[in-house]
Length: 130
Image (cartoon, rainbow, N blue to C red; front, side):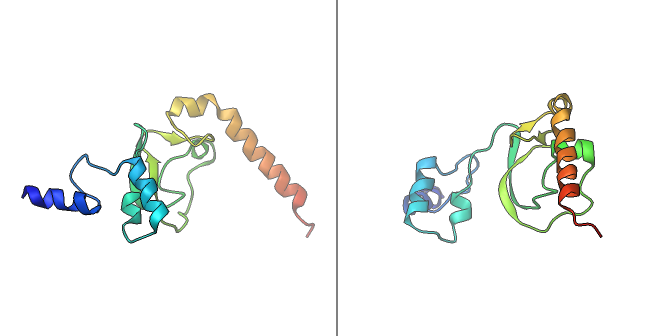
């Protein structure tokens, strides 16, 4: 039984034993050599304490964003498959691409309201008369 755990480590395959993940230098070495079917497993990175790695999530609906608090959640989820660190439940992605608590979003609400107002004004300026 112990040999089954040691053999994949010796030949460089990812192991799925709880708590064991490839080290960053192994990831860089693997990317330099070539891309393979194991690339999604090797490229898994460590997430912050308020993030969680998720496989194949929608870019829009995979996590909550601060702007959703002020402008509503998306009506439809965009089709897509992203595997990356997503914010844990109760945290929101801010404009700096960090997962923050709801109070941080509310504290910086002017950023989200003015960004939408500026983009709406830009859309009105560039719109052709009908």
